[in-house]
Image 1 (spheres, one colour):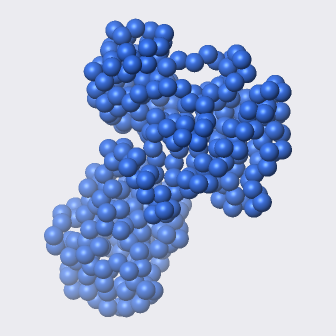
Image 2 (cartoon, one colour; image 1 turned 90 degrees about the horizontal axis):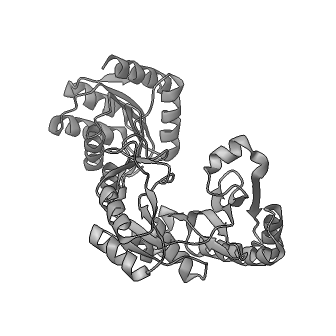
Length: 396
């Protein structure tokens, strides 16, 4: 689960990290009121969307205009900025061409900047630990820094015995910080590690982390995301969820217990088991196709859940073919077949359907599909199914 910048900053503020004053605004009037309340010589008006690169982005209806972060020095400037941002679609490197509609702004007082650093904590699954990543090239796209100047990236991992003060100081020295700032950086980083662990975070990113002229540090921007599987013990975070930022189909799937993630391809995949779903997506790509989704119906899916899964798939207008790949273990192939027939009878399955059934009751499942006289293509192996799905999508 992702949250907005202003929400992340409030969580960091509660833990004593240095954050500037700011106010969230859902309307132009609230933005102007925030300007008056902050009474600062200048403010930053920031679009709040779940994507980075806002300052370098553009609005769909004003491609040559300013991006989603603007510095304003008067009430009129704040009003104009808010008017041109609220309700408009912001496109950045991370949103894709469709962009995201801006529904809220963060009005934040300005701060003095001497240097800009990058600092983040994230789960490194390859090492089964939390990685701490820092760079002296803050304020930039970290992927670009890593590609062009990898020597400017400092990385370490948090061991099972925790994160030590000497590790934080080592990072600070690698960033070229002065003595007094080194101490403050070490304290800040250790607090950040505490936040990461206590909140079951998947990512905490500060970019930039500003060094001010007096050597003090300042969190100028913040991004946080959390492990969905841990939200049962982080229930207070649920109130921070912005459902308007979530893909509607993913929200619908989550409500009925389906694991669904929308992707950019045109071959929909319905599979039981996360590992098999990943393998199915990989083999679709191997044969030249692009998966439209990740969809794991789970081992305990019934006919109604399968029908619901089909309904979610068919709402994606980009889908040109559907590949059903079921290996019956706990899940019975005849139940899947009944769900497919029910979905075809109640929904407009207007795209080619490729089905591969193996495992428990697969013969009964195939018989159910054959007797239904559905317009589908049967496949015996996963490779066969993937090739047929790719061919069907290309012909659609």
